[in-house]
Image (tube, rainbow, N blue to C red; front, top):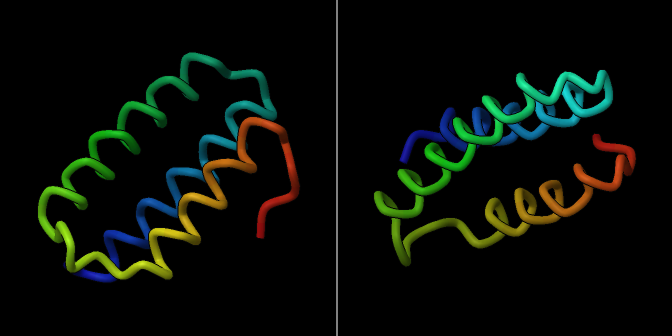
Length: 72
């Protein structure tokens, strides 16, 4: 899978954080839906070949978004 897909997944989470911070819940819902679809497509495409470090980093970022924890 193209590394740009991982970058896009990361950008989704940064956009989600921004939307939540601005209390733009409509946009947050749209970003979350796009991220979910993109993540499912990514996992379906790469399956067991997914780079574990990249997925671990995305998961850590996902876990920090709702709490408003500082993101890189």
